[in-house]
Image: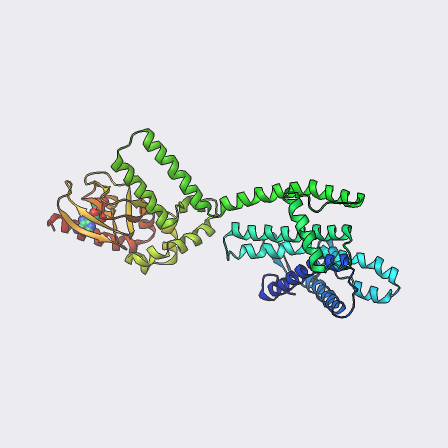
Length: 436
Ligand code: CMP
């Protein structure tokens, strides 16, 4: 059985995609220009029949994903295929060219020719393949959706233009290119509701066709414009949301006469959030995930801090997992007091980016400077005592906060961590007492 998620099937789907796009453009042209199916056209048609037939065989032997589980059972996969895409696939694979060869009488050949259009059923299949590209995340999903929209517009307008050619019966003296160009121009002016009126229907049939296209075309145009506006607005949804948020905040600050200096500081803060994490609040983005998945994502996102903090480095996987889900990212602006001497402590902090000073209550004496990979705020939690010093940020600081209950839980479960942290806390306390 073929695994649908492996590269062979992906390649095969891409071949079907290319073949179907060519068929979608070629089939209506062959019909309206009444090109006999012989020579190179016959060979092309046979190749397509062969590819489409091989596709049916491959699909019968391809596993399917059911409720998140890969089913590689031939019977089950085949029965599902027969209940689903088998019918459009089999219709597209009918060897029409062989029927044309077998019906040389001109009249019959002409009648059968119309059946070739059945091949276009295969178009229904390719949206699946196109959608697979989306999950690969190669380009922005909105830009990708825009490409898909343009693709379907090109196919639809090509069909309408071919329909117009069929109705118009342009003189044989006019070249195929000229007549197609005229028909496509008519389609474009009609579908976009411009309607210059330079190409007009003459017969009743043409008039009915033109009316039908005008009515459906106007709807199609509206749909396309609506979609494009929506897609453009969503190209950078994070940026759009950030801009909206900033507008709200700035309007509020102006309305409440917040001092100019403070306004600048707030803008600077949001700017930093945008620069450092595109305005995303990681916790809320991941809040819907089940715990195991959330742990995996958190481990990946917090890889840096795990590698930076020495006491995490040699720790067991379980310890890291226990702690990681409870680390809350938090940002401080320069000169913020993160911890005030004498306050009761409820959290400790790990520094991911930036640096802080350990200072006296009035902020005049600097005892130590802590940087990326170091932590602070553990003494108050260990001893359930007031903070022994104040902590002031020197720059923008990306910290991770760990709350007291998780800290105690971790201490209880992992005695080696308790020993490490206690040793450091004692050393720091002694240094403080010695006035270093
Ligand atoms: P805590 O007392 O909770 O709050 C202030 C924090 O400053 C303290 O925990 C320690 O984490 C940190 N701290 C105190 N003294 C020093 C020092 N000498 N060197 C580094 N950090 C210190």
